[in-house]
Image (cartoon, rainbow, N blue to C red; front, side, top):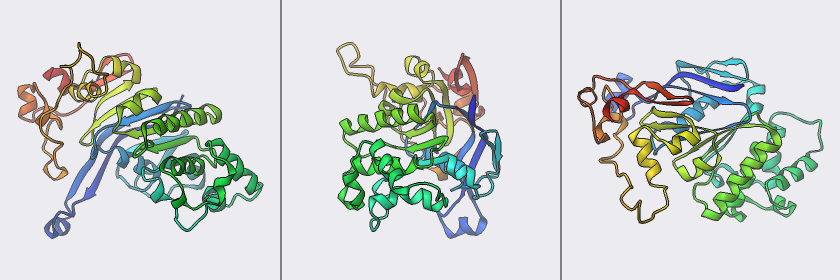
Length: 324
């Protein structure tokens, strides 16, 4: 059963490149015609390089960005994407762990007050706040000794755990984790991922995990979306995508995480060029400038990006099929 359904979302930002752009109200496409569903109690991943639109999607769901194009259904309720306002129930049911954990924690507030803040903001008074905070910090693998510390006294991994404790305080139905392992040692990354999976099993929540790191995505997600320059290139069951990636961009990303050995030493796929600037967006396939084997229609911009079904629970961009 679906918890969240996003249909045809497009997000535009006003260009601030020059005064001329500002006066002309020039808009830039950050996310284009994006659709996906997140099932209850499942983990959905969005992967892509910086600038692909991953975090923009998450912030639009939360209401931190607005959009006039697209539909959002959450827990069988239609959400107005054109407004930043989200009602009390939505704010309780959807929570986000931001990438910069230390930066999202007020440096002047002790950990115990940071963890208790969601209860106070939502005016939930019919509980023993001290006991709730104690249980939350223990649930993320830290002792109560940390409650009287300030954020600057925490390591990166500890700060991330505090952010997780805050995020799950109100037992949300959907937890959004933006680059949850960024800046952490490899051993700590594994601990954080295991913690998220454990919390999901205990509370029965869905997780939307955003990352550029496929090693993170592959070990925790049930379904996966691969984004490039604001568009979905491939989407479907995570295991199927990792075993048989169809899009050249997905293939290149996955080739980087395979363990090197004698038989695979030449299997690394290197893409030519760089991700285009948002100011230089052209019509047609967004991947055409980096495609190793573009069709004539791809090169001339005569074919637009659109997902087609190639297998059960597996979709890939139609231009890629024609090129490869």
